[in-house]
Image 1 (tube, one colour):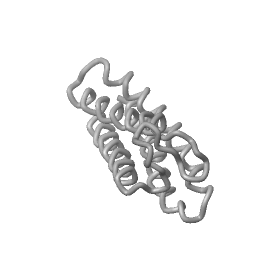
Image 2 (cartoon, helix red, strand yellow):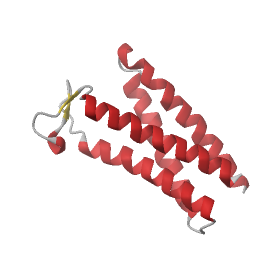
Image 3 (cartoon, helix red, strand yellow):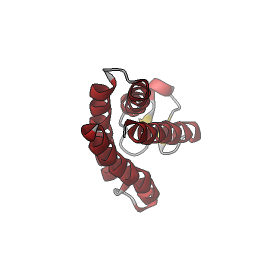
Image 4 (tube, helix red, strand yellow):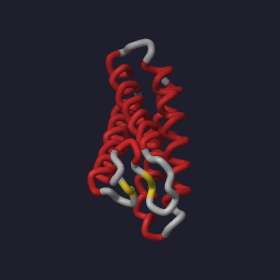
Amino acid sequence: MSVTAAVIMIAIGLAMAGIWTRDIVAGAEVDRSAGLFRAREAGTDSLFWLHWLAEYGTAAALMTAAAALLAGAGWGRPLAFLAIGALVYSATNALGWAFGRRERYPYAAPMLVSLVGAIAVLVLVLAS
């Protein structure tokens, strides 16, 4: 079961990092004119780098925990719980953003998939 959990965690981690990287490069709804660490969300003026840090941190935690589970490392399970907690928070919080505007609705799909994946991983890790 740890292999299945690890594969799900890797897939979600790669998807999170990939979607964010694509959006950063494309400049989707972000004003980067003052530089990466002063990038702000268009319309709200919220700084983005802390949000990116949390998102990429979650992706990294998911993939690191998955590697640890596959390697049989004792710290893999606790890190998996931490990473899944971060993912549940991130996906739930992001759903509020996605449902805030109709043009963002397509972003809700990967967030919902992430929530379902998080629940599946939690069950699998608890059962192992």
